[in-house]
Image (cartoon, rainbow over all chains, first blue to last red; front, side):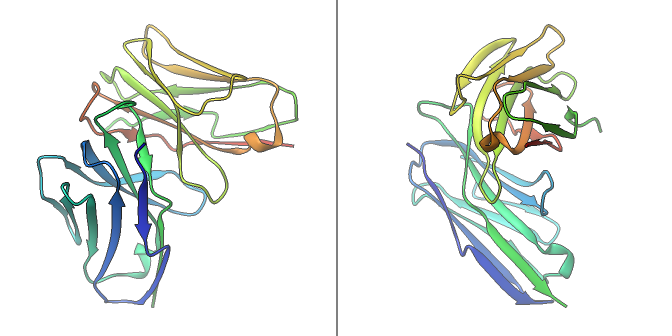
Length: 114
Length: 113
């Protein structure tokens, strides 16, 4: 059974800092990994999708890496801004068994202080 | 670009009532997924459909049922509602299965009183 863990559970940083969010998964047989942003009580905004054959993806100030063999992904946010404050969720789509669903981590609550 | 549409956006029901949530996938997307996110929880997979057939099933209670119609929209029917069913219900769609990205709708917030 795939399990996804995100560390830290919460992170508070001053504006302008670069930061890294971590995601680990137990089963390396995956199709892809997605990073999402969720504002309180709101929907899921997809930030980056990394296919299992890829090592990283970049979008603006965001960079996500994937090390499938070690079961790890990181989301790097450069020059953080108060508007980046949200919960960041990592989700994995596994190859084995139930291969339709995304398995989510519990998220990292990010607060960027002005 | 067109996104996944969910209706209603908010729904308030009493215990033991029924509720129907609707999902309209992105055009030309043939796969639909339903997720439930309880307060302070991560989203949990409920069920998915590919080409109008159930493709996968997760932790969906027997009180819930779902289907995908010929126009690819999907409906989640929930009966005998319980307080614990209060949650955000997300629908997602993708243009196929396996490695395709899942695009999420804005969610339906269900409150059971």
